[in-house]
Length: 433
Ligand SMILES: Cc1cc2nc3c(=O)[nH]c(=O)nc-3n(C[C@H](O)[C@H](O)[C@H](O)COP(=O)(O)O)c2cc1C
Image 1 (cartoon, rainbow, N blue to C red):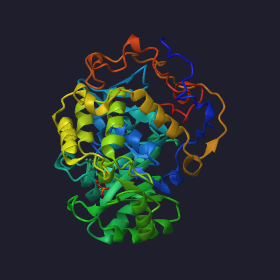
Image 2 (cartoon, protein in one colour):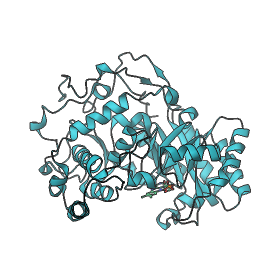
Image 3 (cartoon, helix red, strand yellow):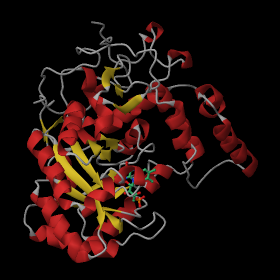
Image 4 (cartoon, rainbow, N blue to C red):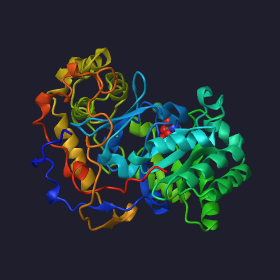
């Protein structure tokens, strides 16, 4: 089996950090937090890593329909450690072990058995599974998934019960719902959901028929939070809707009593919005490093472009003409090669290293508990039974023609940090049942 070099790198010398051994997530882990919402397309691996670096406590992956992941092949990139669940023509889901302690995998389902199979497929790489009960789009609701579950509480709860029964205790089960038109019906549904054994419930404070542009009805949440607290099970209620960043999350928590707040649209515009001091000059401070990271982790170009063209922020240092030129370059680009002027040097491993450092140095205690770490057997990138090489026909990562760090010439690149490759497991890897 090929092994990564074990020499230390100045960037990722994790000996300078106290490495917390993570105890798995619990209901408490969903309290006092600020979370990246699940977002199809916009919530891919690079955005989740940036969100974690800049203060997101937990990150949700984009919704994956249960069946979509069932036949995917799990492939580990031996250079970067990126794990891809590859379908026939593309990666369905991509993750990295560094985000596992904070990663919630969202499932779209209308079938308890399929939901359980999907969860079992990915559970070794995630810390929790979440059921999407809020997507109002016809592609979701026509097959009984997403917001359609809100009017079929028996099915909704049977999926959550099946997941809770099938998952080992170290994998949390949660649900994300929308408000129902009446408060009374919402409370009834929330009570049923809590009774299934979920660790947390996220409430998107819009009803199924409300448009994204309509103001979220956060004033309805306080009563729901009090109701859940009255049930005495210690379950976390997460507010979702219209939060724009760290300060705003404090305001929303005060107003609603919610235990935590989840952000989507604002994070799509700037994944550093979780920070007290989010990146402002995005043309200089966000877009270039984001592009470098995307290439390093072989994020598919079309997804990368989709994300960066949406990044916005105040404090640009560019004059009008240069700003226009910058945006024009991005919007016309067709590959990583086309954005070289924007990126400067392709130092993606350095960007990744900084993210690893930031994640490693987080204070995990208040969320998930820490223990002194002691060496233990641990899954190593590239040391498992599955294939070691990136198949040439897969769309994500892009083929090595893009100079993605997949070839032998990259053997001397920065080693994968010990927190990933070493003897220090971040979370217990559940044994599939
Ligand atoms: C681009 C995009 C993709 C989304 N994809 C999902 C999804 O996969 N699953 C989900 O439960 N909600 C999804 N949502 C809804 C968000 O998670 C969130 O509930 C909604 O945008 C309200 O939060 P906000 O006001 O912070 O934007 C998506 C929203 C956006 C903008």
